[in-house]
Image (cartoon, rainbow, N blue to C red; front, side, top):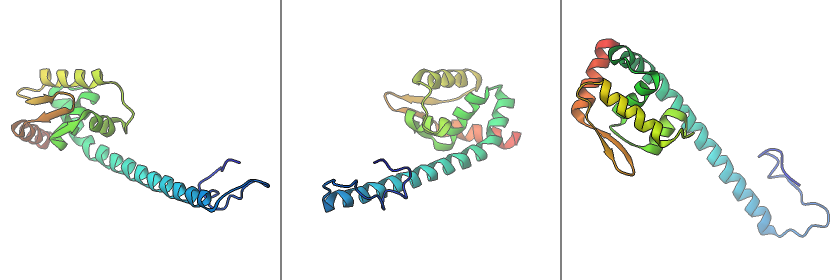
Length: 148
């Protein structure tokens, strides 16, 4: 017997003739609580991602105009400037909601940003992610403020 929703887990009755201990029902309730908690965390993360994307829309447009960045390059740089340092997984989460597009795509975008944005100082932290210098962050923020 398979539940069709989370609500049905708590009230599921075992099939006739099945031997069910009291701990298996308790375990089922514990698992239900864990699933509900994870669903709440996922909803909160999705809401935060939507807020970040909304805030960064203006900055992305300003960078696209000033340095002729593509939308993807500008989004990448916006997240990096906002956070200062970020892991590859964090960048995937910020840009795609955790649906990874592949390591090389992010590396290519960074390479193009370095070429297009004068004086951009980003250090690649081997096996982890990237760190942008405070001077570069300040210059980019000032340029965004001028363009906004």
